[in-house]
Amino acid sequence: MDLKNLRMFTRIAEAGSLTRAAAALGIAQSALSRQLSELEQEFGGRLFFRTGRGVLPTELGESLMPRAQALLLEADQLLEEARAAQRKPAGVVSLGLIPSLSQPLIGMLLTYTQARYPGIRLRVFEGYSGEIEAWLANGKIDIGIYNRYRAASTRMHEVLFETEMKVVTGAGSALAGRRELRLADLAAAPLALPVRPNALRTVLDSLTLRAGIELNVVLEADSGVAIKDAVRRAGLHSILPAHAVSAEVEAGSLVPLRLTDPSIRQTVLMDLSRQRPATAATRLLYKALPELAREVMAGAR
Image 1: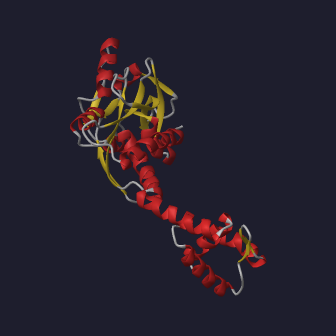
Image 2: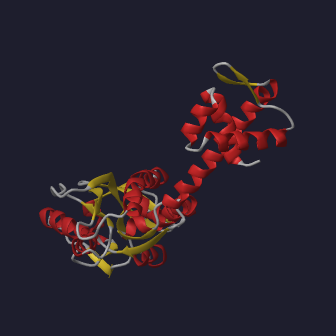
């Protein structure tokens, strides 16, 4: 007995006629009668009896029908799952990330892809917003996540979230006990900031020029890890979004303070490269990233 014979058995019952069942199955009626006879021998009894209008299930046939239908349904579902697994997206997806998001987001994205789409491999490039937009433009990456501090351009992109920038200081700093700081209060504080050209530096230059103050930038770095390490170990301070330091805040090594007078808001955007074809794997991750980004923000609160 095999699935083919079970399917033949249920088709005869549904059709109520050997002639109609044979036509539906695309075989000769004589061949169908022979297969039915073989199945009846295996089951040890008649499955159908003939009437003037066709066939009807015997008591044995009636009792076996639900089990046969259930087995066929399970087999069909198994086959569909196997086919779906073969259709799952696969391949390399190149992703450009700003430093403030790379640490929390990469691990979450890897967990997501390994659990659901093990055929997808990630290639991650970390850079500041200007670099990421350039990589999108020249096709180096498939998906770019970058930020803006002013109104976003009219390019096609998706807004992931908005957040306020924080003054970040070490847990042992004299500033750690404060709840907020004005921008003018930072004039005397040693700072670690990104290397120019950088969108945050451009905003800070504009604000400090307008306020008539000058910031004391002790360290410029193109690495978010280096900036945070300088704040933690060397007594410097920086201006970062809360999600960039959520792990350090939870560990008690860094403290975020509210920046006021003025505050600085950051908008995080996501975009696809127009220079590369969007594969199924790329489109899937593009749809998944907004929810993962919201989880990052939830963990930073």
